[in-house]
Amino acid sequence: MGGSPPQFGDGPALPLMPELAPSRVPRTFRALRHRNFRLFIGGQIVSLIGTWMQNVAQAWLVYRLTHSELLLGTAWFCSQIAVFVLGPLGGIAADRFSRRKVVIVTQTLSMAQAFVLAALTLSGRVQVWHVLVLAGALGAINAFGMPGRQALVIQMTGKEDLINAISLNSAVFNAARIVGPAIAGLLLAVVGEGTCFLINGVSFLAVILSLTAMRIAPAAPKAPEPMWRRLVDGFRYASHHSAVRRVLALMGCATLSSMPGLVLMPFFAEDIFHRGARGLGILMGAMGAGAVVGTLTLARRTRVSGLGRVMAIGGLTTGACYLAFAFSPFFYLSLALMPLVGFSAMRQMASANTTIQTLIPDEYRGRIMALYSMTVVGLGPFGSLAAGALAGRIGARATMGAGSVLALVSSLIFAWSLRRDPIAA
Image (cartoon, rainbow, N blue to C red; front, side):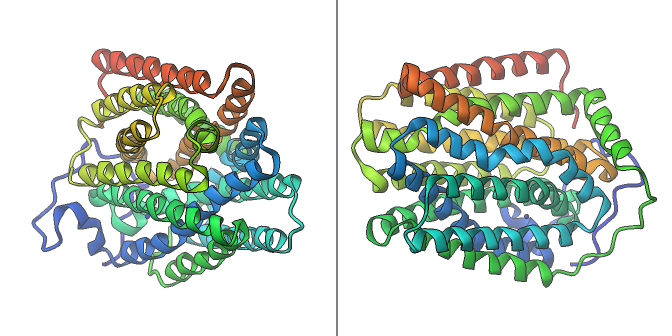
């Protein structure tokens, strides 16, 4: 996620991202010429590996303790519902206070959460309700941290390198998805879940130190305004902006449709393919590998025009691959599909993030990115709970198939809307 960053709150968002002047930094990595972004990415590389280790270990812990698809879905619900409920307040905080300070505070609280979970697990006292409560606490923290991180990126790089910065950040996120689950899969089999949680807690130090080392120009003082008025104003802006509204709707459907695959992956790894924790790590790592390739190819773009088509194609490809995965009889066929899922899903997500951030003025950035976080994360709890409940009734394969149909239909509707009203970002 050199020099003072430009301010963008004094006028409307620019309609097009300008071409960049020649630079010694390769075009794919051009956002790294900014010192603040280099610090941010360095910290993220370490911290996100720990985060993915905890994600995999937590899912495995819940499944080991309960062998319940419903409780797998419940754990996801608890970890993300607060992003939906508290997301608007997080957006207000990102627009009202220093975004860097907001992120430092939330990262510190996330570190504390990981240490508590590690202590309970390593001591042998952990119970499912402990995991659910701590997952809920982490969700509340993320409700404030995610809009702050999303809105902070442009202060590190400026608008001309925004698409590259978002793509590189996504690439790092998914590189960690390869390394983190792979390490977690090995550690789960040897030392258990508690060590994964402990490593994640320590990893937060990297991103906290990188944030404190940044040099970011202070934002202009903001006039006091009632919180409810800022909240209503943000919702009104999003509802009246056709392109923002359509992108948010597409990403909401993408989130709901992907949850069966994410929530039920431990069930597929253990009960269908009989590969255990190591198989789960391999499947998740393969998805991350495809996502890294997808976001790095997107990072070469210097213009936003055409990203609507990327979103539509990404959704269609993701839906088709999940449909094939749902009814695949072989582990290695399913494994071959996972890089395609990661490639298309993350290109869609990075394109949506870039498009929205390019369309909106800086004064609304925190609140609109909070709405974006609500669609890509906050809706996840509803999808995860539904996935767990449906899997208990109609089976894991049919549940994943239903999610893939939603992805296909919503992407077709979005593609049709582009033909009638293109997104001029």
